[in-house]
Image (cartoon, rainbow, N blue to C red; front, side, top):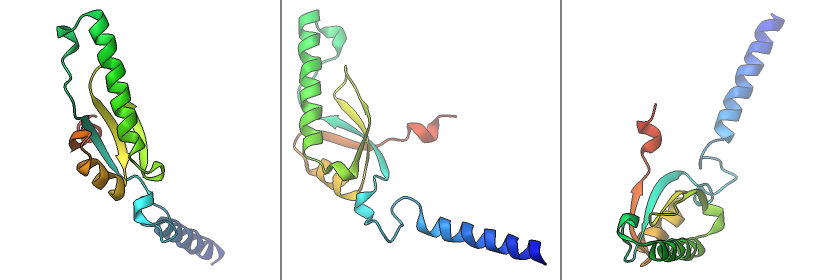
Length: 124
């Protein structure tokens, strides 16, 4: 009978743990505070493929990409954004964002496009 009680107690703990953790479902954290959507952000601007550029122009473009990335990130709340990858040669960012940050990205004049990052689901 003691083993059954221990098993039921353990099962109860697992249920409680699954109800109080997760992405955005916790009652202690507002949904907008948890980055939950992976996106690829394409920056607005006039960027050219690096193969069309000389060394100096390529360096200048990479500097411009970095500055554009910094400007977009500065518009977003730090708590709702996780930077997954900053690209050097292409004007993009890979981010995990909450609903508030996603809305800001979609409305930003510094952003040309926001797409869901589906690479995780396609690999494997």
